[in-house]
Amino acid sequence: MATTSPLRQRMIEDMTIRNLSPATQQSYIYAVRKFSRHSGASPDRLGIEDVRAYQLHLIAKKRSWSHINQAACALRFFFGVTMGQQDAFERIVNGREPEKLPPVLAPDETVRFLEAVVGLRNRVALTTAYATGLRIGEVCRLKVTSIDGERKLIHVECGKGGRTATRCCRRVCSIFCAPIGGARVPARGCFPAGRLAIMSASPHCRRRVARRTMKLSKPMTAHSLRHSFATHLLESGVELRIIQVLLGHSDLSSTTRYAQVATHLIANTPSPFDRLSLVVIPPE
Image 1 (tube, rainbow, N blue to C red):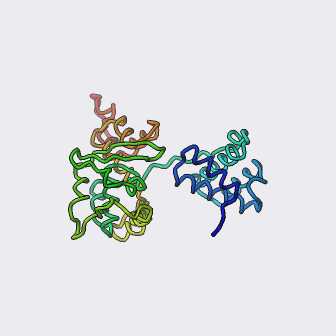
Image 2 (image 1 turned 45 degrees about the vertical axis):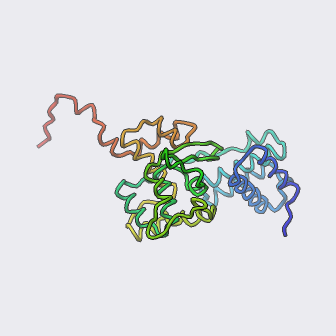
Image 3 (image 1 turned 90 degrees about the vertical axis):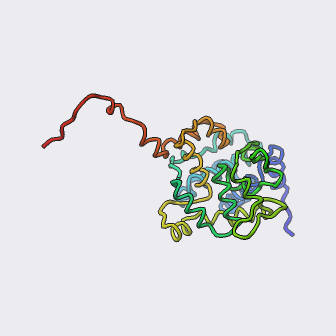
């Protein structure tokens, strides 16, 4: 059995003290290990200039900016917290990630997509993700005790950032006790396989299945259902502040981007020109 080095154990303890999620801890450890292997030395023998060289290497390899910035966060934590180098917080910087509009399914596309998902567990997980706006990881960690059938609510504990939230799920609650396709959701837990459910649900959202089943050109991930949830709420007239709370966004700017993809809302917004009593005659 492989033993954990004192340096790695120290970093794990630092992350545990700060209550970082297990997923964040795993990604930070992985990023520091990749940095160490690339540089050919133990990370405690490396410095900020090595981090800068590594970032340039990732850029040259055309890694995504989210990948590059995640590595920066991990190395900033390692050098700034575990190694106690305070200048790391200023010198290890993130790159400006290009803003991309999230892929969103139309309501009829959402229906056809969810009907096309193979497997009871996958279908229930992805349907719950769309119905509640939860992240797929939050869905797969739901417990039977999280479902309040009488009040038609789902209680989400320890979501992203350690936040606790409540979601209304009038129709979804019945899914967990009613048979679907001749089978039932396991009584011991919503998704007892936990991490396995996340791994099995996510691939069914990807472009390969969507193209084969629905002939979609949109890039699909499990998170696209969360984007669709927010956009459809906005198009139905729900205020951005309410959507911000439902999504668990700490900053409203994270929510306002959905106004750019809410096509119905844009299409139904009249131009000031429409109010003018002006007749424009097209040129002959």
